[in-house]
Length: 294
Image: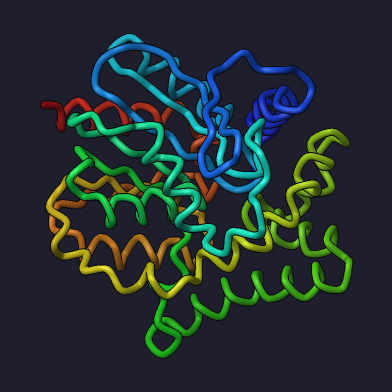
């Protein structure tokens, strides 16, 4: 659950997304304007945020990395100052991954890719599709529902799918806020939704349509079909010891299948560890990247 200190950080940084215009670089990908923050020089690190967030969730991390690395924190489709996802494009997963492709360009250098939750879903997909462009991969509780076998992981699958189903059903009935509250409380702790200030709640609620499709993405069957055992790059798997069962089971499955993975669970943290326990998370990530240079 969000602590008072971390909740204030969450509010301060995400509120700025809608209340202050950015002077950050933008580019056009498939007709959509993409916003991102770029700082530092050196080996490139790409940061992908969670749902209902923005590039600003990584502020403390990019400040910790910018003296040695070229850091790029992206606003995913529909969040921050990036354009909404165009529904006439029927493949959201590929659309998100194409943003990463466009930003890193055709240069031959390899990147360190970091993703949290839904951002971890996109990071995983991109890494599987473009392993030759990856130097290291960090996944912080990636939402990979298709990794959970309903027969073998029935408890975890049903728990995660029930949250998605509740959201889908209420959104379809025109009761988006009801679905948002359950989803937000599930990841942030009971009462988190009611504890948000009005501006942030409006920001999250405005993204309900995007959440609807993001829940579909995390159960995309393509995510469960990759031959993970062939991915030979170093992988850092991060989670919180107080997280819910599904993301912890997903980390366990990934740790067994990736040939070069390291799994770390943070004491006292849950799903939002990059925000609630950012100091610990940043220290671990800095160490991991420093061990996988050149």
